[in-house]
Image 1 (cartoon, rainbow, N blue to C red):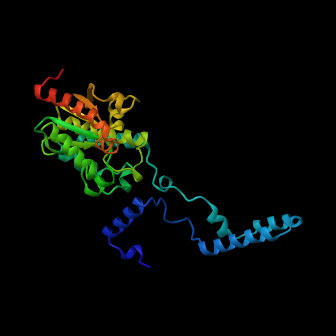
Image 2 (cartoon, rainbow, N blue to C red):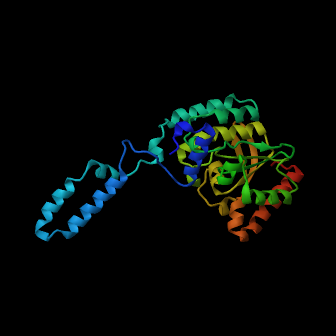
Image 3 (spheres, helix red, strand yellow):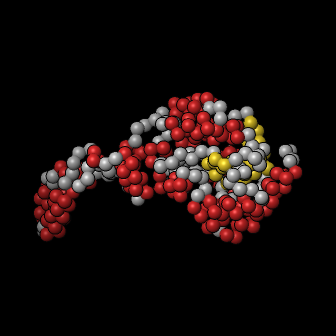
Length: 293
C-alpha cells in the first residue's frame, strides 16, 4: 500500500481532490478499527439472537452487551468534514477578509490577497481560487454565484457547457470574455456544489465588493438566483428579480446593475432563453446609450 509519506505534494493534492469529488467526507477514525472483525462479530451476534428461544432473550441481550469495543466503535457515526476542519471564528474571519480586501490597490494585488487568505474553510477543499478576469474596455462586469466543478478544474469562472452558453450570451451583445470583467461571489467551489453558508458568504463579501470597486464598471450583469439575492438582499426567485435596473453599492462605488438567468439555468430550461434575451437587449440598450440613470 502506498503511504502518504511516499507521495509528492501534487499527488497528495490530486488524491484529496479525487476523494472530495467522490463525496468522501472522512478518512480516518480516532482509533484504528478492525472492520472485518467487527462485521464478523456483529453477524454472529445477530445469528445468536435469531436462534435463541424467547425465554433466553435476557441471555441474548447480555451476550450483545458483551460485544467487543471495536464493534461499539464501528457503530458510531463517522465525523463530518465540517467537524474535522479547524473552527474559525466567523467574526474574526470577516474582519481578516475586510482588511485583506481593503489593503489591495489593484485587482492583481487583490487576487494575491485572496489566494493567500486562509480563514475560509471553503478553500481547503477547492483546487482553484477564482477571481476577476477579462478586460475593462466595455465597462461591463459579469458576476456569477460560485465556481462549479468545471470552473474549479479549469481555474476560470464559467467553464464547461455553461461557459459556452455565456460566450453566446456575450456575443449577442457584441462582447467577448476579453472585453468584460468576469468574476464570482464566492472564490472557491463549495464541496459537492452545495450552497455556501451564511458565514461563508459574509467572509467572501469583502472580496467581491472590492473587486467591483477596483474594476469600477459602468454596468454589472448579475447572473443567477443566488447572486441576485446576495446583492439585492431579497428572497424572490430570479424570475421575480430579473430585468430590473438596481443600484449596486460596493465599497463606496455605486453602479447600475441588472439580474438575469444563469447560463446553467438556460441549459436546463431552454424555454427561459427568451427571458434572458429580453434582459440582454435591455442591458445592451443602456450600454450603447450610456444612460446611467
